[in-house]
Amino acid sequence: MAMAPTHAFVGLAVADLVAGRFADKRIRVAGALAAALPDADVLLMRFAGVAYEDPWGHRGITHGLPFALALAVVIAALFFRGRALPWWRATLALFLAIASQGVLDAMTTGGLGVAFLAPFDLERYFAPWTPIPVAPLSLRSFFTGYGMRLFGWELLHIWLPVGLTLVAAHGLRRRSRQRCEEPLQALP
Image: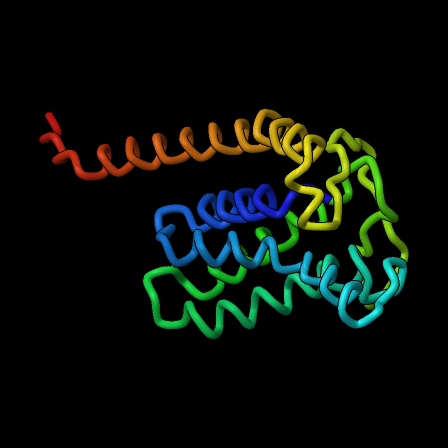
């Protein structure tokens, strides 16, 4: 898996980009939290004795696209009905933010793969390209030398390109708004 802060940052970015001109603090925070949520399956392993390879184990059902869709619908229905951000757009933004968790995990160098179609198909898959070093599952391991080197790698290879994409998108949005606000010139 990628590190939890990286999942949250990518989820924030995806939610912001999909929400477009409707993006606000609420959808960004929801995208960040929802994108990190699938890794709560680690708690099932730790406290409920669920094995890694079980359907409810790490990268199982909670990393699947059906789970992402169900969670997105619930969050959007609870927190985004009747807001400026259309409900369908909030659902799409959250779905893609949550799904980014599995995509990033499928791009790592370790683990058993991601059950993208769980619970309908428990087969686990990796992406054809796996450039992301796998992160440790324990919180304590994040604060080791390896954890810090890995976070540095993720900052350079994930955060930087995603952050630059956000800056570019916001620049384009601002430029587009300015054009729309300019008064129409009289036609000759």
